[in-house]
Length: 66
View 1: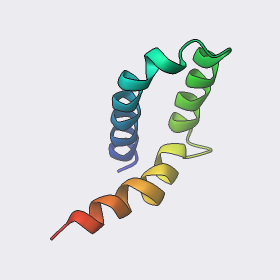
View 2 (view 1 turned 60 degrees about the vertical axis):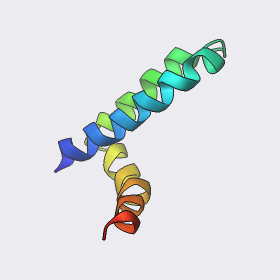
View 3 (view 1 turned 90 degrees about the vertical axis):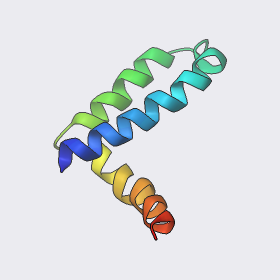
């Protein structure tokens, strides 16, 4: 379940990044912040992907479920 949450959040992040990368890639330390975010998602101590999935993705999917 943990990896499922990670891959769903990561896929949403990569989709959003595809459209916004051209606009925000010139910000200083963009790639460092991006790498820190991915490490935060992966870390078993912070459980970032689980947190984002349960707080944002799951409620959105639950609302659309019939």
